[in-house]
Figure 1 (cartoon, chains in turn red, purple):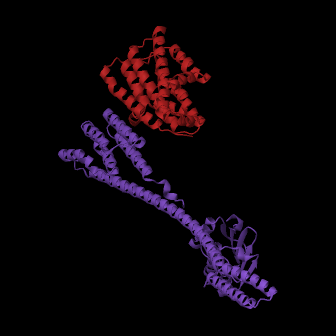
Figure 2: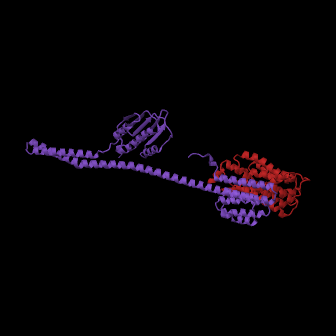
Figure 3: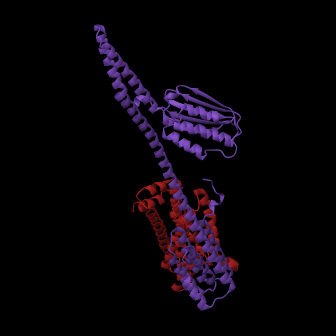
Length: 227
Length: 369
């Protein structure tokens, strides 16, 4: 578990990472309630922050690849699978703890979160999807800067098209169907279900979709690429 | 190895392209069709299976999952019928069409006879079979070329061994011959000479004393000398080979070449060259003269053989331009290997004014033997 603990430590070495992991969640909590939204504004936006945070911390693995650390790991008695799951576990744990803290702090701050536990499950699942997405995303690029620049655009696009920033009903029918191909749509969908106090069985399909997206992304991202 | 610009298009890449296109079309079909949540779930499942197939080698029976999911989804979204093309393709790609039987039975039971569907399934099957046989033949060629390469390496090393063995044999034959000569000289000539010397000494003594027997001894000694001289002649005659060897045959080859004048220059003591080196120098000369005759329109050929203390250098130059292919032909390659097997080198190159061949062979010192 050396890699696991080291990965946790590494996530907090960078100032930008600390901002994404610690400062932005505080902003989420401090954002005001809006009349026209079922959840406080910050919690509607929280998915975007999770995507960015996942992108930040998963890029550590891309650093490993670019700096040749992965090559050195390759000749050490550590399999690529061990390297991968210990890193991913560390990232998932960090994000899930962050989700938990945000939800507890949000409720203590006085927001009406309707069903905090279900919300926690939804965001945790989405955090896993976000990590998988970042892993797959970075596996497609050779330079970290390019990958990041395009990722920012991609995340906003996904957030807008997936209905995280505004309700999807405003968009044309065809766009709504396309949106179902994005993981963000299913986050927005499950948040809506939680916020409207729908039946738990309704959450089954969004959860299954998020899980399937995670698996698909992990399969793409787990391919070992040596720079 | 010549590079092939179509090499990028491997069976693996074509499979990837087919899968991507299939999912693209299926996705579009789903978007255009009535958008059901089951459809996207089903699509994502198929995508995951395809990704897994891309990442790891999955056996053909795993397509049964795809088929099962297709059949289940058909009740919710009729578009899933078209998705059956994916398991059909995968099954054909593995060359195991019998795993498609469950879907076929289902198709017949449900009496699906839409021409579009059948067309799509058939084209998927055909593409799968084509890719399957393509990758099989590529594998076959790879194995074949590997085997050929191994054979060639084995043959080359065998040839090298053979050549060095022949050089060894030549040396051994020389030693044996030397042994035979020394034995023959010792046994016959030496014996007779010693006898003659003894007889002469006796004669000297008797002659000083004025003994009448001296004359008899003198004739005896003379007899012995002539006997030993006869033995010597015989030994030498036995040693001399019937066919011409070495320098003489070298000169003969150049004289017999009548396409253009050949200028032969010889420097140094050619008697130092052992017979097994002549066995390389002669074919080298013959080969290059043949090449001149065959491939160039030379007007002049220069041959120089340089024998120094430790090396023999054969230099052949012609002023003809090279016609046709360049590089080492089979003859030159063989010669090169033979030269290498005795520790020498041979190089042929096209220079500005013509074509030249340089062969350098090391001479072994007699003292080492």
